Length: 112
Length: 114
Image (cartoon, rainbow over all chains, first blue to last red; front, side, top):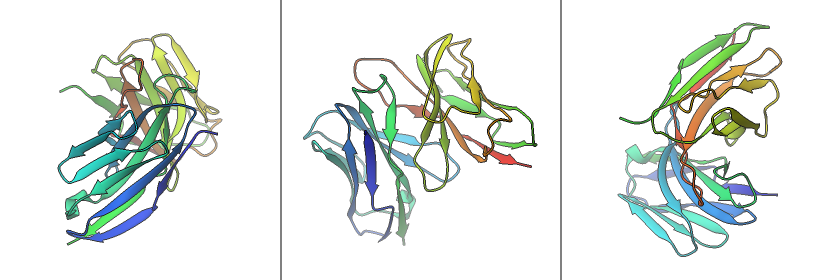
C-alpha cells in the first residue's frame, strides 16, 4: 500500500538550533516529492518539489533532500517565524496523474 | 494575482441540511481537488477532477458531491448523508503533465455543526 510517513509528529527547537524533519515514502514509482508549510487556519503553502534521488533544493533556512526511500527537510538556525506544520506528499506512477499521498505532518515550534 | 479562492471561510450546517463550499481558481489549471483535514490526520482526498465535466471519487467520497461545469470552478456539496462533516476543507489545483506538479491550495473552509 502506498503511504507517506512523517517523523517526528512534533518538534520543539530553540531559536538557532538546527534540525531535520523526516518523510519516508512507499510508492510504486515516485512521480515527485513535495514539501508544504501550513500555518494554523490556512491552506498549505508549496515549498519544494524533488523528482530524483540525490536532488536538493534550498530556500532561505530550509533545504530539502531526497533519497530512494525518504526525504529530509533540514532547518538551519530556525527563527520563531519558521513555526508551522510541515507536510510532505508523494506523487505515484501507480495512482492517477496529479494525485498526491500526504503524510500527517510535523508540527514545528521554534522558541525565542 | 493568480490563486485559489475558497468561500465562505466559516460555515455552519444544521441537521439534515446540504451545504455547498465554493472553490474558484484563476491559475488556468486543468485539475482540481477537494481534501478534508481533521486534527492528527493527513489530508484525505474527497473528489478530484482532471477535466471539465468529469470527476472521480477519492478515498472518502461518501456523503459528498461535486460538479465541474467550468474550468475555474469546482464546488463541493456536503450532503445530509455525511454524518460527521465537522472538518477543515481544502481545495487545490494543479497543472497537468507527465510528472506530478505541485498542488496549490486555497485557504480553506471550516465547517461546523449547529
